[in-house]
Image 1 (tube, protein in one colour):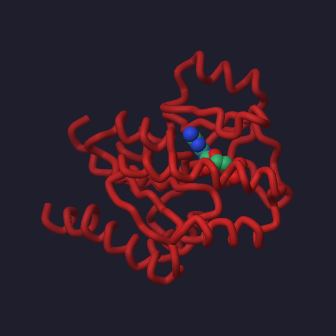
Image 2 (image 1 turned 60 degrees about the vertical axis):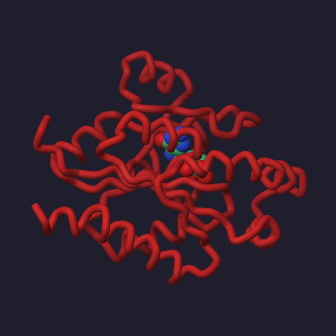
Image 3 (image 1 turned 180 degrees about the vertical axis):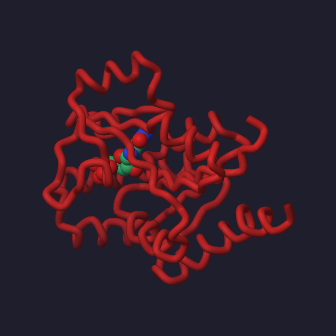
Amino acid sequence: MTSRSGKLIIVAGPSGTGKGTVENAVMEKFPEIQFSVSVTTRPQRSYEVEGQHYFFISKAEFLERIERNELVEWQEVYSKNGHFYGTLRSYVDSALEQGQQLLIDIDIKGGINLKKAFPDNSISIFIEPPSVEALEERLINRNTDSPEQIRIRLDRMPEEMQLGKQFDYTIVNSELNEAVSAFTEILEKEIYQQQRSI
Ligand code: 5GP
């Protein structure tokens, strides 16, 4: 497969950093970037569309897919709920073969594994909050986590920031427009300038 020119844009970060908002803004700016739809065992939320946000499957089906080697990587992301998430090999392979850019929203450990699996075809970006205090404020305002869950997320931050060092780039998301500009610069440098020089 020598003609591969597509790139995996791997995006991870502690939860509550607003990475989803940054990703949506970037994808609006670059409509040619495709979102990688993962498989998950977690229940579908009311606003989510099957095949657009995730493919929602049972745990039995998830395990079968692991068995059939259909997942490039997978993680049990929130162990307390026992939900599984995985990146589909079919998505990644067809995007790379077609020279398509694929944005992959993934948990931090999964991101590191994916980067190792595709060292030459990926750009990994870690999105971090400006501070622990800012993250705490966002998690409180988001109003989706109990105080205990917020405490667990905050306690996890030092380890997550450490893991974040393994990513190619770090963007501090203090202000949305600035974060989107920083993301755009990375894409320009890593993808679009290289394409122009071919
Ligand atoms: P949520 O349930 O809020 O959609 O996502 C929970 C976490 O799972 C997020 O950190 C998200 O990035 C991560 N995630 C989504 N898809 C995948 C995947 O395919 N593999 C891994 N390892 N994590 C994923």
